[in-house]
Length: 258
Image (cartoon, rainbow, N blue to C red; front, side, top):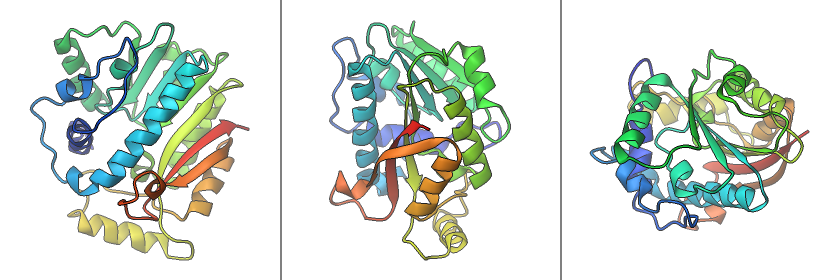
């Protein structure tokens, strides 16, 4: 993505702004719409059913973590995610990690809203190069306290070795009681993954600077999670949450550190 703002992240935000969603008593239900002011949806509406399923899954994971007393939420590849504002709660700190260019634009937009962002920490990271464990330590995330780690729509842009490295770094910062919530692009068992990736990028016009890199069958994805130090306790096809979504496209997983 170089030094450019992620147009994919902007498109996702625009589509998400149209969804009916819950919010905490201290949260801002209009945060997503305000954050994506002036953005264009691009190709994202084509995936609106899957984005709705993802939104429901990750919103539920964040709200469940807050309800059980988890005081730290780390959103990896945050883009224009609004959950730090929508689910603002006493005693809960949100850490957002993303590419510097996208994050700088997000920070500017948050500041322009004049929103209460005292418990929102921005930390720039290149997931293909930087040590996420070091980035989190430098941002003040407390590895001795339970944390919810959110990785929505990110892993498809990383190589398999980068996925293991990133998730392993999160596991190293995960105290007992922590959880990982992650979305994984999948295809049916037994099909050639390299072909799926190539055809998917061709259908997207070559990826337009943000190519997809990892699409795997569910069993292979879960193996990567275990290599990285996570054991799944929930793994569902997103079509289970939104019936009109096409099955065998996105695997939604909640996992605990091993």
